[in-house]
Image 1 (cartoon, rainbow, N blue to C red):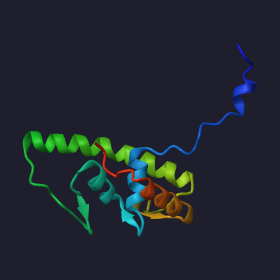
Image 2: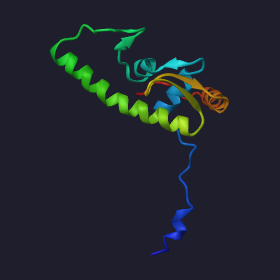
Image 3: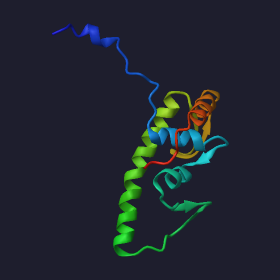
Amino acid sequence: MPPESKYEGQKVSQNHLSSLMKCILLSADGGTQRGEIAENFYGLERRYCGGYYVEACLRGRQKDDYDRRYRRAQPAISKALKRLEERGLVRLVRFGRYVKEVCLTEKGTLWAQKLGRSGSGNQRE
């Protein structure tokens, strides 16, 4: 077994971007709201828009399914935004502790242009 000091300096590649991160970079060119990310990537209608709650006309099983998908999407979006911010690709505009808007940095703009040229899609299949 090799000594543990051998593994201390090794880092995981920071160049990998998930499909959600790519979608965020490609859609946040002029600034995008957090709700638009859930709408574009997961296909979920926005629940809160412009200072008021939007109630989707769903009942029973449809509402339960929507709520479940929405609750699963939010932590994934939060984690992706945090990782993009740590890498210096986006700037998050917060209201209190909640992220309301996502803006690209110069480095993020370069990555978005690179992704746009490579032809990678922004929809999850």
